[in-house]
Amino acid sequence: MKLKNIRCVHRHSIETHPACFAQGHVDYEFQNDREWEKITNTPWYTFPEYKIGYFDLETDGIKTDFGTALTWCIKEKGGKIASGVITKKELFTTIDVDKRLLQDLADELAKYKIIVTYFGTRFDVPFVRTKCMRYGIKGVFEYGNTYHFDLFYTAKSKLNLSRKSLDSVCDYLGIKGKTPIDKESWRRAKYGNPKALKEVLRHNEGDVVITERVHEELLPFRKWIRTSV
Image 1 (tube, rainbow, N blue to C red):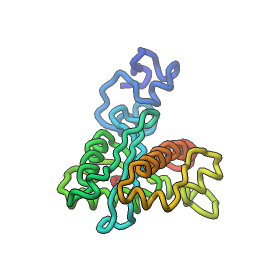
Image 2: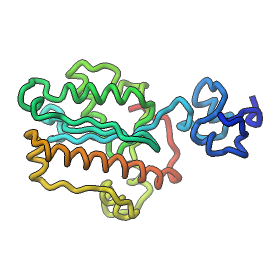
Image 3: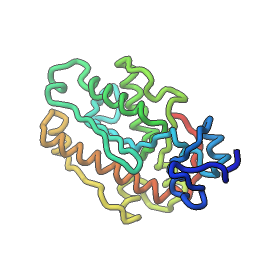
């Protein structure tokens, strides 16, 4: 099958409707992402069956055996944000306090083939994986199920900045949306204060929005490889 014979959903060629091809809106049954990349000459991660999500987690501790998940957000590339937040009742009346929250997250993650994070390799992904192992939640971040692109390592290798935090990268690139939270709000959220939890959730939502924008800025400078979580 030659590229000139393939049409987008609007029946146009790649020359006349390149945006459709870039977004995967193509009327042809490709067998896999490699065939897609070869025939359309567009990156494998734009394969129509691959949904991309920007993921971030907020917790009250860094280590999973002492920490509790407070909120999570996943923003679909170019789309809406799905989120979850723990409740005060769960924090004080259940043994596995964040099990429901992790199950909801697992159900949402199952919709995505590719997740993009900032420093998720060292924190978000292992935190979630460890929690799900304890709770017996299957299929989350198991090898081969999900591809993962961590923007931290792109920023570290491609940008010459004094600090490589998401805050620093956004500040330098002029990306607005990072919302600071004071320590008192974190403490109140940890004990289930509804207002503080909403503040944490807004912070979480802001992070996935700016992660997508950072990704757009850094995308031209590093080749995506098929890396499983």
